[in-house]
Length: 153
Image 1: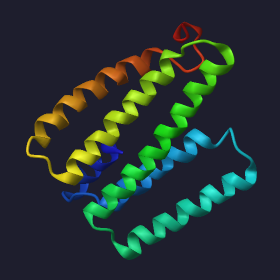
Image 2: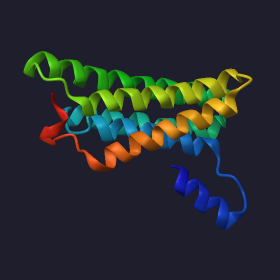
Image 3: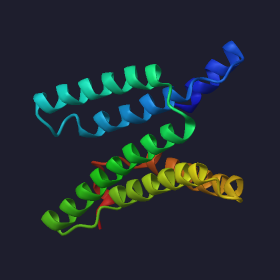
Image 4: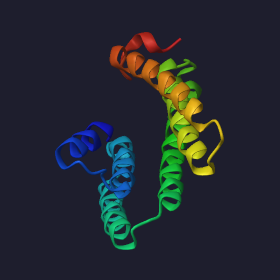
């Protein structure tokens, strides 16, 4: 989402609407759940996404409301990764480091949005620290894939 927002800013010299981030965050959820669910559920996810897009532009959410919505969506994503991690461990008795990294990455995203929402005094320092951690996670994810056998211990 950030590269598109930066390109938009460079072209139009104006910040992109915060609603864009809400929609972009929602699109992460179907990308995770699409293969594992029935077509009825997938159509329901599309419908919810369209409703969210329309509502976010009609209601023009305040930043705080948008942050709460993003935190909620990220929390659902976190629960999804936790479920996959636990089920993988329970069924195969293997500790999959890839899913554990996804859980911690999602936790850093949630904590960033939460700190911005509550307006912590040292939010800038925390934001930079979590960004560095997310960059390190990005390096890991650029090397290892979910289906790579070296991830399970």
